[in-house]
Image (tube, rainbow, N blue to C red; front, side):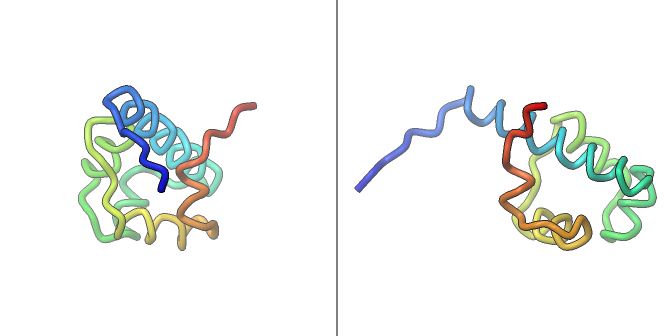
Length: 82
């Protein structure tokens, strides 16, 4: 069995990736933070905090975002180096 230790550096990097992906996909749909929050039925600050890496994304919200962005949830966790 493979055991991966999840350290603070990994957590920070993952938060950066998720934040960037959400912001990019939101921009592609030409949605403001406020309009995205309204669609997802969350407070605008929730989206702002996630995009600024001040708040973690719950699994439930990740699933809602993926559905809205028409992608699989894991795609929001992938590093998109361009």
